[in-house]
Image 1 (tube, rainbow, N blue to C red):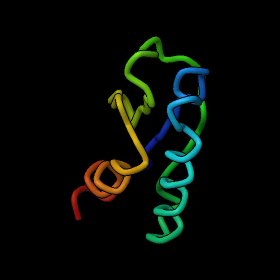
Image 2 (cartoon, rainbow, N blue to C red):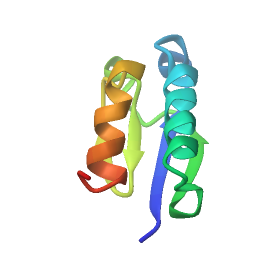
Image 3 (cartoon, rainbow, N blue to C red):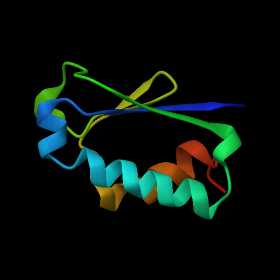
Amino acid sequence: MMVKLSICFGSACHLRGSYSVLNAFKALIDKYQVQSEIDIEGNFCQGRCTEGVVIKINDEIITNVAKEKVYDIFVERVLGGE
């Protein structure tokens, strides 16, 4: 099943580190060789600016994402808790 990952790059999320979140996800995608299973995109404001960095995995919005949280989110949501 294709996982759709959207990362907000609106100004508030950008200031809170959306690029480091993106880079952390990219590193894990490469490490686990799941490029064919994940569709990654950037988007702009999700309307949750005070809760950034905001990401969306499929239809689930996850707020307050820091690069330190990316590994746990990736394992649980992308790898299915492996």
